[in-house]
Structure formats: structure tokens, C-alpha cells
Length: 446
Image (cartoon, rainbow, N blue to C red; front, side, top):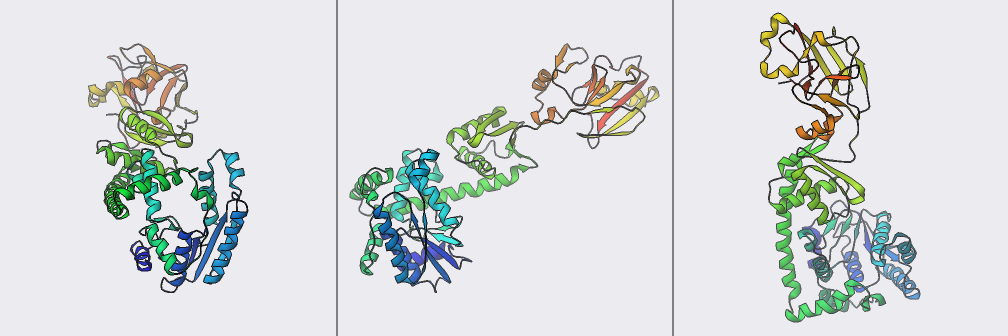
């Protein structure tokens, strides 16, 4: 078994660059086996320091005290450092509303992270992986969930994942190692215990080599997962833009690939507890536009196949006097060029673009450049007066751009807008002598 564990460590490069390794040590058979193998091969693995890390969960009274003392003495026998943490799981779970299992796991890993170890080895084994598979299956897990426990995650490594519980028990017996038994593992009060005591025996009864068959199944599932992940990572990289993701990159991909890309986007933006309902809701707005709240009340928005996060920040109101004699004007939403076209040059104006230009002589003296205000209304040539909200919706103007539309306003009347052109009031006609053209620097009105 030692050779199998060492092969797993090497194949997954678990200890690369690690000199101080912590071992999650409960005192049970699995963690005792792991600690013994690692301590016996410390030099071979290039480790300078091993620490046995024991967590007292404040749950089982004297039995938990016994486990703590056993773990301390076991580390002394192995000649490795020992550190322990006391946490009151029942009290914390009552405050947070978590289950005892969820709370214990969260606090346990928090203790591991403050242990000062570069990496921490936990004693999850092949049977634990089977239990995780069954547990996730009952909850309708995705491919990722069915792949079970990863060999490595952040600072955590699982050297026993290729080893069955039967192999661990045989190692304990061969090396005459003592261990303690957690009484809570003997009852069916917890979901994992129900799986361990009732479902797994049936699976092994149907196939005595079920653990080996499961390993082959898991290998196939992981290969599929890796293939999808690799392609999803590539699509994610292509979709990243400044402040948003271009959904056109992956919108028409196979559903499995699309699911993974969106999951990666959510993870990249620190969205936790991603559910299938979240993904379906995001697929809907990718197709139709709109917004949806996901984990932690984070808002996902999609406009014109552009996906971005958070509330839309409104551009602050601004007003700038319009000076017709200036060639350029700087505004909070960009730089704009101002041109005057005389009557003799009117032939250069494309008739199709006539609505982009303003009749100079119809502009009054008190003219300002500004962005839109709530309640603004506007009348395009040959059309009734409409609110900007209706015009934006009719023309599918992205929400992100609506407060970044430049407006030329004459007292209370809007006479020109960046997106929609000139109003009925200042439309170019047969009597026009001079035309004003306003265009964003680097863009055209064509």
C-alpha cells in the first residue's frame, strides 16, 4: 500500500515545493495510516517538517478528549510535531443555522489554514470518494460533482484517494497500529453514515470488486470533465473583454460546454453556491437580455450578448456650455468634434445621414451639452414625441450606454442626441444655410 500512496503523491505532484506538511489527524484508522506512511517516508518525500493537526469539535465530551490525547501521544511516537485546535461546533452551528456536518467542516478547514503548514494532507480514501459520489448523485449533481473528491485543492492533498478502506485496515493490522473509533460514525444520524452502512455494502455484495470498477468509472468521468474544462477555459479567455464577457464566443456551443463556461465566469467573479437554477436563468438572459440575481445577491446583466456583473453605475449629471466656435469639446463621456458646414459645401453631405446634422441657424444662444435626465422626451422628425426610455427599448440601446448619450439642449428642448440624431425642431431643410455636425472622436455618425 505504501508504494500505491507514494505513486499517487508523485503522479499528482502533491508535494512539489512543500517542506512543511500538515496531516489532518483525528486518531481514526484512516488518518493514523496516512500519518504513519508519511512519517516513514519523510526524507524520501523531501519533507523537513511534519505536523499532526487535531481538531477537537466540542461535540463528544470525554470521547473527544480521549481522541485528542491519543493523537498527541501518537505524534510523539512518530517523532512529529503536534498541534490541536478546540472549536465549539454546536454553538457555532446554532448561530449560523448550518448543520453540524457543514459547520464542523468549515471550521476544521479554517483551523488547517492557520496551522502554518504549506500544505495539509487529509485522509480521504477511495471509499470516501464512493460515498461522495452517491451523496452527490442523490442531489442531482453535475459532472463535476460526480467526479468526487479532487486529489488536490488549494493547499490540500489526498494521498489515500487511490487506496480502499480494506487496504487501510490491512496496513493498520500489518504495522500493529492502534487507533480510536468515533462513536458518531457508528450511528445512522448522519447522511454519510447511512450511505456507508446501508448502500455501500449492497454495492459490494453485487460486485465484490466494486471499488476497482468505481475507479475505472471515475477515471472516465474525469477524462470527460478535463476535456470540457480545457475547452471551456479557452472559450472563457476569448470571451473576456474590458469590464464584460462576450457571450457570442460561447452562446452557440454545446450545452455541456456552455454550462462550464458560465460556471467559470461565476467562479471568476466570486459567486459561490452556484446552482443549476442560476445557470438556467443566466442562459435565458444570454438569449434574451436582462438581468438576474445569483448567489450572494450578485446581479448578472446581459446587454447585446455582453455579460457583466453588479449594479449599473449611472453617469453623474453634467452640463457644458456649447460654444460653436470651438472645434473640440471634452465631456465626462468622451471627446467630441464640432464642425460647421457652409451652404456651398452641402453637396458633401450624404442625404441618408441628413438626420445626423443640425440646422445651425435654428440654434438659440443658450445651448448646452449634457447627458439625459429622468423624464426626458424627444421628437424625431416625422415621428411623435417619445420618452428616451421608449426609444432605448425600441432601438435596443444597451443599458450601459444609456447614461452615456450626449444631448444638445436648447433651454428645455432637446434638439439633438448622439444616438438618434436631430429633433424635428432643428432638422435640416431646403432653407438651411449652415450645418452643425457633432461626432465622437474616433467614431463617425455613419
